[in-house]
Figure 1 (cartoon, helix red, strand yellow):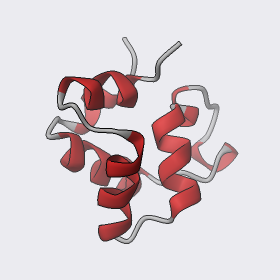
Figure 2: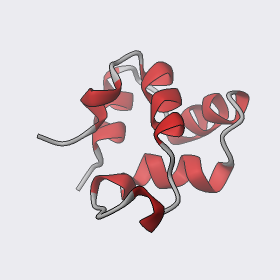
Figure 3: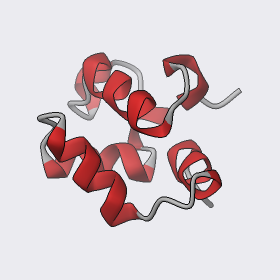
Length: 74
């Protein structure tokens, strides 16, 4: 099953490597960018559970050209 980020990246024809590269340009670590790519943040009780900050989700939203709220599943 694809994560929300993967679905949005697919619409832009963006590969995982391109996404990670764009996130790295914005000072996001590769492990965190991979967690976002996999959608680990979609299943949480507290953001500290998987060490992904809202600022990193904002960076991902910018890379994918969407609003931050779009990254969360309905």
